[in-house]
Image 1 (cartoon, rainbow, N blue to C red):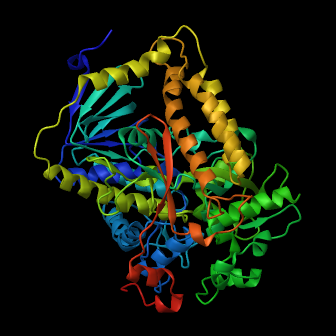
Image 2: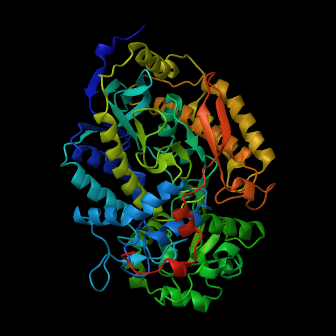
Image 3: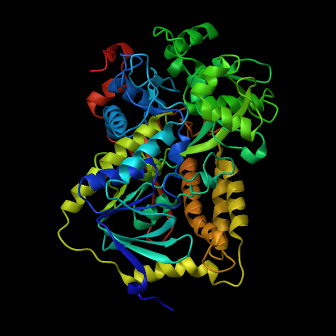
Length: 611
């Protein structure tokens, strides 16, 4: 039985932002500032966002702690960290505008830690040449969300909480609406709009060990993919080197890089500070080769080199994995993170209050007295929806994206702290891009009632079956498959994962949820499975094609970076027959002025905060 489109609860907005983390909030604020009627869809509650998990700080070349820092050094660090696979223009825009966006946040009321002379304090972080992360203890993401919310709710933004978007609707090729449902009642809802900004984050729940919570099921990537947008760099999924590993009930919960930024060191079961053995050639000129040199850097000696614990996340995660494989792991299969012997208890409680309480309450460990046990956890996806760097629009007219659900900015590996400044910069740019797009529309947009009916029918299908596949069991099967698409990979393992995903697809078409649509978490889980399956397949197929090891993508059968892959991105799109199409894309030659910066010596770039 079909439903009359006029019977569905409907909202009209100029622009709809899907996702209410930092990127979505900043995008919505900018849209409202541009006099657009702005709606925001939250899968959970406003404020329940993964932005709060970015505890260490927002990377921006303010130059407050070391006045040699500037946007060019930040850009160079970002490109080097991403193994030069980043989209050049996105990395440039990010580095150029990050400082202004952080200052803007301060003007809106964000409370950052301060230097002795009253400026925003900045801490060191992995992959950054200078202390660059503006922070609020180890609760920076929480402070950013608080500020963006407090500012945003006064800007006339319409918030639709506990609402899950299911499908993007189009008028011919252009975005014209969003179809979704209220999670509490199960009732469907329709949003008429001229543009959509996707800011739904990543898809960490495809993996079993992850710092991500239940919301991260790849919804935005799947909706964009099904609407005709391309996905890019999906093979690059970042495993943060330090997640909790014990007890099992908290395995995967993030341990901020700020612990290492404040002086914490990694040790193996022999008590050795093993990271000195894992510095890649590319970083040796900037990385300390002795504990004494590393300590000088932490003590503020600007002529010293940074500690090896602050190498890029891919390097640190693989080093921990190697120590475990060679029999030098911690008691529960990770490494020890020690700050207790490096800093006094008051300093730890003041600079890392969340970490202190997290370990005290969840693991019964006092980090002012004991070492933490940590190990890699799936944390962030560098790949995602392909966008234009200037406007953040996808290949689908009217569809924009920002934040973690996009690809291109971070290349093969994201530097810590770049995610928080990323969401500020590209949330802002997506709002500007949406305004420009909407101002050029020449006719009203409509929604096809048949498209709505198809979306509704697909959504209720699990409820209308008398039996079928359990969505929770299916999720466990997918997570088991993704063990072959983990921190290290092989061609055989990736092919095995792809074959297993293909075998799961018939089960997905027979997924079953008991009960009605009201208050039904089983139905919610069933509807989350298709996005996770599509993202998982995109990651596995992209990883199989890239026959090298670069950044967060490590192939045991193709060790090391290969020059012929250094200028190739992998693009995923939905083919006309519904299959997944994966192809290599050769990048354009980088702009000369950006290549000169990225490959230059530091001495050529240093020159104070006004450079």
